[in-house]
Picture: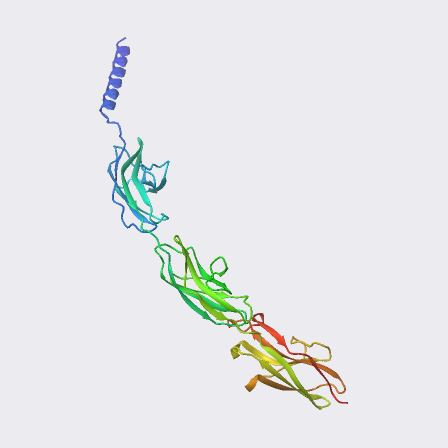
Length: 338
């Protein structure tokens, strides 16, 4: 009987002690957070700052900022950026803002009791402007191509979405005409290859740059592509049964370095071509763009067909068969003597 009374007294005392202890433990509260000044305000970015004044007696699990163009932004109705929890002060540089826009921002902090917000801070991003771009070129004008670009002297305060050159056969072309993008660009200059042009054609070009404010154009410039060379098969003189001299003329007003080779292709079949495995000879042109060569090892008493030819580079980039084309003069026939 005494033992049972003793156990009951122990349980009563234990429960009383636990109740007394729990009554002495203070319950956690929501944290207290302050939104500090927004700094480093640019056209599309700004830096937010926050400060946890009181953690509310519980661990801060998460903190950060919510912001938008409406008042009292929250984590459910606005854009938010999170920071590492448990920091006394925290900061975040926020990108991808809109230029010349009024924003509202509040810091927030979360603990086991919930989420609390700091005071609302307002700021306006800087306005953006059209870029200022200066033409570069044209360079390397050939029959079918040229190069041109631009130099950006002022980016207008925002990153570029696109740069390039627009061209047309009429003045002041826009991006609604043909446009050519550069292979790459840096923060300032870029060059574009303008290909698939027409021979002996006047073109207008303008560099352009697109940022968040719109499309900016440089000044209009013009250039004319070179005409196609004219190759003439001129004279054939038969000297011997197995030898003949052929003459040709290259009529060409463009740079000499664009014409890679001149010469003659010949054979016993009509329309001989400059191709691997078929007979041809090179003949460098001289003053007046004339060129001549002697054909040897011909067969006596045979009709031959001969055409002057010129291999012309499409552009200045490299010397390769993919970058050249062949022009032919009119076909001429001759017969070697018996």
